[in-house]
Structure formats: structure tokens, C-alpha cells
Image (cartoon, rainbow, N blue to C red; front, side, top):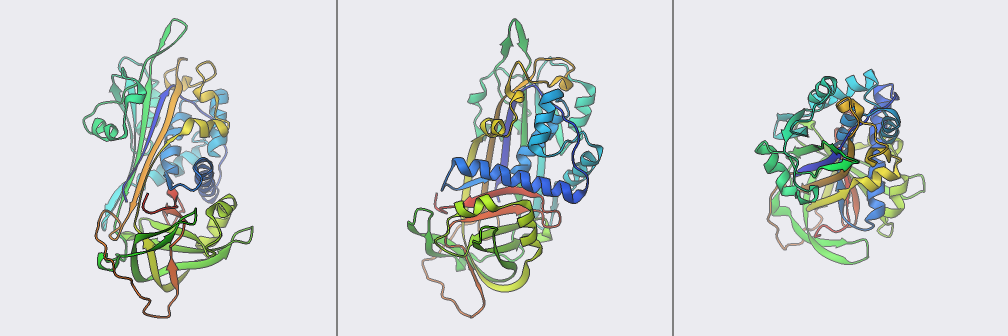
Amino acid sequence: MGPLLLALFLLHSCLPGGISDLREDLMFLKTEHALRLYRSVAAERSGDNLVISPVGVSIPLEILQFGAQGNTGRQLAEALGYTVRDQRVKEFLHAVYATLPNSSQGARMELACTLFVQVGTTLSPCFVEQVSRWANSSLEPANLSEPISAIQEDEWASRQTAGEGPGGSMRERGNAALAQLALVSTMSFRSTWRQRFSSTDTQLLPFTCAQGRVLRVPTMYQMAEVNYGQFRDPAGHQVGVLELPYLGSTASLLLVLPRDKDTPLAHIEPHLTASIIHIWTSSLRRARMDVFLPRFRIQNHFNLKSILNSWGVTDLFDPLKANLKGISGQDGFYVSEAIHKAKVEVSEEGTKTSAATALLLLKRSRIPIFKADRPFIFFLREPNTGFVFSIGRVSNPLD
């Protein structure tokens, strides 16, 4: 599973009121946020492969809440469904994030945020303390003199490793120069399956794309004990739901596949809710199955500004309305760009491998089959809390 990256470029910050109560409520809100984000992106990219990291989007917005005030803060709280200004929310999320970066039994989960600050910018000590304690975050001085658009994805990792900050142009409002900040959130997950697919069993099998085109794609196979269930969504569409665990139960890959080959994902996506996902996952049963899953690799680049604007987060990007005074105690910061970059790779080992044969694998028993030979939705999630790390769909495994 390749790294998931989020880059959020900004020129100030925000803060809200209070919402969330119980742990279950918050996890439902986080799942709703993930699904809402997915639907917003899916609507713009009909029929395309996509992957997006909800946690990679929410963490920078949570950090901005520590500096946001007034209407800017309220808009952020409404978009996320909660505010980290609520002490109970803050404590719970802090505890969840603290347990994520780990390396055990071949699994590695990492969350990190770096706030690059223009050299000479004075920050509020309170804001600095909050950021430094949030989801493995840190503050780094930087010379933000290059245009934001010049920063390419491959440069982010190298600049972070080298201790350099991303570029960003200085802006002016009237005669006052504005100091700039760049917030970079990275989420990466690397693991192996609890039960690996053997590369010798990978075959070229038919996959029917959303447009009806039939391709032959490298398809992995294993006979395994899995969590599986068959359900109907609120509109009556039948789906098969399969959960494939990774080593150490750190995370699992949840697959949602329409049972009817003529049912497009676009008919199912609008009906996905946190409640529906909870019902499905809690109703899965252990079953021995033949599992066929295409190898796939997806990389996406999104401009989050239009999505957040459609959610009502507008002041954050407005130089005249943004209220991010909590960052430094002064006016002058606003978010100039919000860019999300994500990638995911699923293969036989769970990370990177290759090898495929041209032999057709024949069914050798009468046990049930899960065959992802048409577009499907996937969730990379923490099975105990339902925390969604990434969500996406595979429309064409060869793209």
C-alpha cells in the first residue's frame, strides 16, 4: 500500500465552537466525513479510478481549528462535524492519533503534519503547543519565496527529508505584506496481507469496466477465511461486502461490490452512509471463499478548495474574511491553496510486487466466490474503531 499525501498551502488559520460527545458519535462523524468527501470527488470524476485520504484531509483542518476564530471557525466545525476545541473530542482524537504510527508484524502506519512557516513570522505560543502535540505534527521555518504551483508531488518528500520547506509566493493586502504558511499532512500505510496472495496464482482474467468495455487484467487469487456478507442498500441494490485483514489487525481492506453486473457504482454511492457501513461491517460473518481481486494502483491529485467551498468553507480562502488570528495574534493569514495528493497500490503481498501468468485459474470447489471483475469501492480502515484512512473506487485496474 503506497503512501497517501496531502499538501495544504495556506496564508492564515481558524477555530470553532463545540459538537461531538461520545466516542461512537465521533467515529460516525468521521465516517460520514469520509463518505461525503468521497461523494464530492466521485461526482466530479464519474467513472474514473479514485483514491482519497479522509484522515489526510481532516488533520490539517483540525490543526487550522486551533487558530481559527469567529465565522471561519464555525464553518470548519460544520464541515468536519466536530471541533477540536471540545476537550473530549480533542482528547479522544489525540489518543487515536498517538496509537497510529507503529511498526508491528510487518505493518507500518504513519501520520505526520508539518507546518512550514515563513522565516521571521511570529506565532502564538499556544498555537505552537497545540500543533506540536497533534498527530505527530511539527513546525519548521522555511523560505517561502517560490510560487506554490511550482511544487510538484515528488518534491514534497525530498524537501521534508532535507528539512526544506515548500515554496509559496508572498501576497499583499493594501501595503501590508502577508506572511505565508504551508501545511503538509502525510499519511502512509505499508503492510502485508494476513494471508498473502501467491504471485503464481495471479492470472489475466476479464474485468468489465464502467463503460461496458471488457479488459483482461492481472487478477490475484486465494482461497481464504474472510469476513463476508450480502446486503441491500436503501434503494434495494444488492452488494457483496468482503473484508481482507492485514497482518497484526492494524487495518483491513473493505470491498463493496455490486452483485448485479449491470448496477453501476453511481447507483450505490449516493446511498452509502456511516450507519449503513456500520450495519454491514458488524454483520459480516466468517466464510471460506475463493477470492479474486485485481491488482491496482491509483494516484490522484485534487484541488480541495472547490470541495470545501461547496461545503460552506468559504471564509478560509478569502483574504478579507478569513479569521485565523489564533495563529499569531494578528490578522493577515488566509488559505491560498488546498491540494490533496493520494496514491494506493494493492498487490499480492499487500505492498509492491509483480508477476503474472497467462493461465486461466479454474474453480476447484463449490465454496462461495468473491470475484471483483467489475467496478468496486474500497475502504482502508481500522477495524476496531472504523477509522477510515483512505477510500476510493476501482473502475479500471489498468489505468
